[in-house]
Length: 178
Image (cartoon, rainbow, N blue to C red; front, side):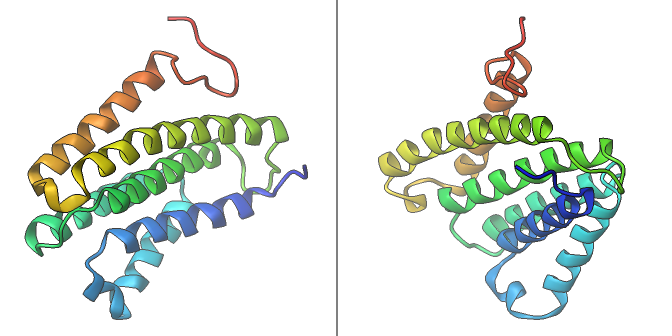
């Protein structure tokens, strides 16, 4: 496995952040040129300064855009869209954490990549394992009111965060002792 340059990592981070914003937007907003350009700009700012407030800005704007799309604009919340947004934001946040500690001119070590990919893969697999049965049991988003979907999504995110802080999901292939 070759060691990628830090700039390629940041370019991937930009693509993931921009995609998260675009998925969260109402469909009619994505159809124009202004909102996709704004999403790309916010994603670029977050990738350029991963240790700055732009990462948090992108993630908060994404969640607010999804809430506005579902609650204000009346688009039915979908488990698959919620899973996609949550996954993209988790990947973006993790990539930002790595990028914040790697100088722009550096190469990212293979051990760091493998540990990060293992942890991110574990979290995403757990998310799919939870979302898939919920989607099947509820018959899709039409059976779940938007307010309940938001509460369940937040509960799931808190559950994964709790599992991460307690060492249930190993960081970099090593489990932590409580």
